Length: 203
Image 1 (tube, rainbow, N blue to C red):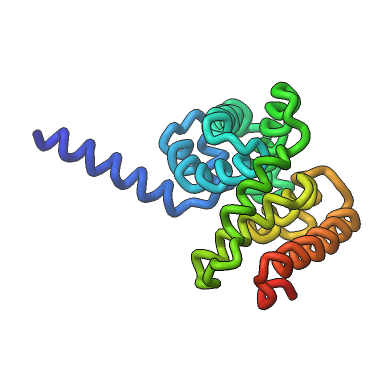
Image 2: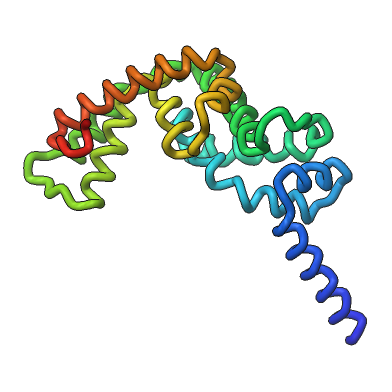
């Protein structure tokens, strides 16, 4: 029994130590086959990766499958990470590639506008009171009405808090293009919010 307790204590200390390490250090450990480091990295980032993919593919089951593929790639290719960007940026780059590939395979390159209209209609009725939950619902509906390119920019900058440089790395476009898309995305979103009666958030 004492041996079992000692082993459990050692395992707990290993997990605590891994949780305190940076993402870059975790990747180094993953490259060496450290499963605990892989588990910690997954726990840190799987939710954000899932939400990012879901905004692209708009299907929960597909998003869940792609998250598994993303982290399987991480397990296989951790040693190839060169530290030119944040680990989270690298993960979203992999996620974006997987999501767009899945979209092409399913021939869903264009967002289903009918689904978007139904989401919007359910959120922004005239009787809706603008408390926080209702405003969030309207905001989500308006974001969904953006073009895929603009929706992606909004997602990366506001939901994932990525810089212009990082967004450019993830999408593979110049920073000037990122800024241009952001300008038009914010303008379109402001117009949509104003049309939905959320003037105070449309500025």
